[in-house]
Length: 321
Image (tube, rainbow, N blue to C red; front, side):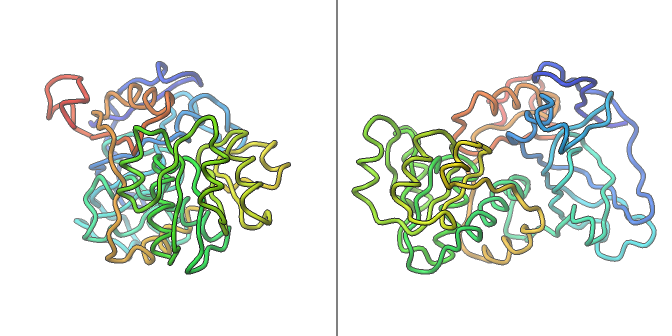
């Protein structure tokens, strides 16, 4: 038996509960992965609330969140040739990763598993798919070219920090990122010029113009208006926050494409790249982690640690920091 965090009805993070479940067995075309780190993302609480149930339906009761994780292959099913027991892997795609062990489709067509480059720790691997994959897709969408200048709204979040770093790897001459003053150190460390949110933002950004492209990771009227004002052409602007008003103003929404993870890893290669982990929680405290994510202003990524409750002996996530 092993631990999984489940929910039986849509609701807030309080409906999540830890449960003991039977260890999975690798069927034909599957491998069993022991998760060592699990990423927590806004899509998790959107799924939990039922907001995206039409696009991401869940089998209830017994639903399981989690769209990204890192781990080790511990069992290989019949017909699997891409992976072997002991391989470190990144698990990405459909929900279901809030558990210690998971049976995962191993085919290339399923696109749920990628070999983990040796350079990444388990934590860094676990938080790559959503943040870095979305960032890569956004930069390709706006067609960022070497020597161009990029505006990033919400540059201190997981996706924003990934956008900054990948843009520089693509050859951007300068990246300007908006963030609260408390997060400017994060933005600067990633390689961008930070600009504070708040009254007068448009004027402060205009001092750094012109911009060739923009990626909005924050959402809202102000990022939309400044993107439209400072970046010419709707094809050079994108937001990762769904907002009909932004689309109407010429800032289209981009949804993460999981198939981009391999290309993202190729771009990163051996270059410096890191997404800061803002907090770590034991897997059994997934509800608390999700509430943290829902509150916003995280300034990095949140990670669940399977077995963390045994490591700490208590439920204080700060012990794991």
